[in-house]
Length: 400
Image 1 (tube, rainbow, N blue to C red):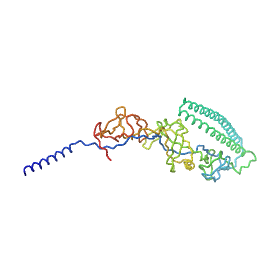
Image 2: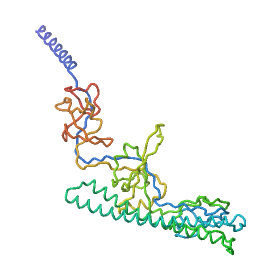
Image 3: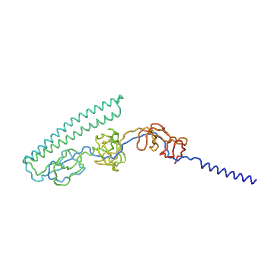
């Protein structure tokens, strides 16, 4: 009886040892991180640092050399068109000679010619604006008949907006030219015999707006053509952002823009007006030369921005996201779930506890996720950042 019990104990020990050895030799799953393919909205943007600037800026310069009286205006003060913003006193009594008179008369004639050219530019701008509006209406009619694309409609609308605003710019340029004629005529009258030369030469503002910057505030001698101050309308803002040329070619006029990190809590809305036709070289932070292009963005004011555009001024820093493509319902996975396989792309889907290599067709990327056009379905579990141990058919173990 004791001998039989002894063999039973030995058999149990051997069985337990065999079971432990089997468990030790059993293949274990490779630990992996996983995620699911999901459907939802996706947006691809061109991101860049932007800077605000006043769209219509005028530089007030000294019409003649002389002694500048101290300018009392400060940045932010409102000015009216034709308002005297500075006064120049003669540095010394100057006799009226033929040369001085001829120079003043020549400047007056040149100012009148510029004013006439500005008036002609208004007519040309109005003709172009009328043509752009008619073209916009025609494209919209074709779009209603399904013979034009939405992109054509957006481009036509953007062109009509640009041409309409160009009329306003031409009118302001004509007004500035007219004011220049008045200023030059006043200068010529200042040199006429019998004129009072002790009161100084008034320098008027070429337009109504706000003083943006006073360049020469203190009294002192100034030369003809020296900048005295800058005047503009801070409410007429635009945002400029420089993008690398390969990215800028994907930006279309009329594209929606989201302006962030401007100082407020909610992002501001904008719209691309145009992409400038010439690029420039810029040295990146890493010391690499890059060709970049300026993209000009107009504000889109709405009741949801809490007056954010009104709180911005000239030269403020922002961050911009220009929408290149967007969709409300696409299948996406994180970029770390797909990898190169030959000339295409593949992913490891987890099926029955094993890694199944699947060929996938990918579309747009937004820097975090990738659009899956084929090969996966919503709800499929995929491996994130598969390493060398993950191969087709291998057993995997998901990590928490």
